[in-house]
Image 1: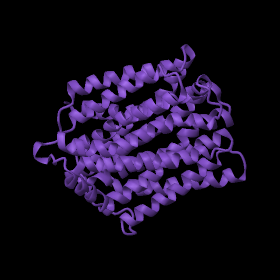
Image 2 (image 1 turned 90 degrees about the vertical axis):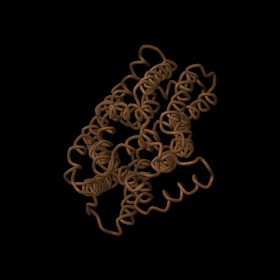
Image 3 (image 1 turned 135 degrees about the vertical axis):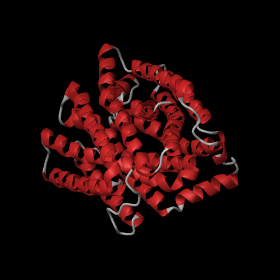
Image 4 (image 1 turned 120 degrees about the vertical axis):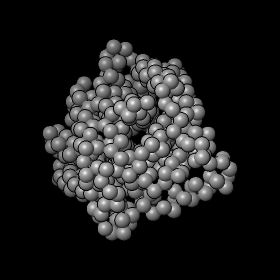
Length: 399
């Protein structure tokens, strides 16, 4: 497989998770009305149910992929994702929709865990950070186009068609994976699937200071991001009344994040993961701190909200790809288990925090702004623990 196709396929697999969330944002209101959900905040459970299943199942796919290789567990997870997506198109009740969304998340867990494991099997150090940046750049195309696609589907039909479209796309990605992705886990690195070996793998991951601290740091920031995703439709449509332009604003920020990831892939080999990520985290805190302070003084005009939020998310891309690479770097010998533990913490922890922020929506941007700033401070605290109080210290030579 050529390098470009490898990156594109890894990104496509991870993008299925963004697709499962972002494409339905324009349809949440219609889903709630169609299935008798009166509470606006309760409609967010369509996202929360998926994220919960997605997070929990990652703990299982990691050890499975370390034992049986990457291909078989990945294809099994994709099959579950495809079947659940089509099932969501025919649900009669809101409860059934949430149940199938949970199952869809279970299948999607394989894509996140194994995509990261495949990259770690193949690359290390700054080279891994560069590839992860490119993966994240392609991955961000989905948030750019998915809400717009969802909006077009809503204009042409109704919300059931969103899930049909999702099923067709995921089926195409499944066929691509089956035909083209080779097995990347060398036979000599496979680990027995026993309680003792699995427990030892989890111990290795959870006791590595650098890995666990960077994992908790990115978990905090993902909590802020999930909080925004949960309430994005309410903020843009409810507060700022942008109407059908909501996907445009959403896509503009996602596009900026994709550009940021591309720039990170160009710079990381020269400057290193720590210098870029630590600098971006400090910039993220400065911007979100300003947004939080201004939101307490009164309503932010749309142009100011979008500007500050876009600046924060531009830096989020540098933080995310580099923090994930830093967390995986010392754990190449247990990459599947490491990816599953880290994915579980980021998704479930971030999902819970994001749900709290989303449910705190009060008709203003204050809860979201507070979440971004305070969780950024928590991330900085974990980075300081990981690095023993010293920022910007490179560990890997230039590539």
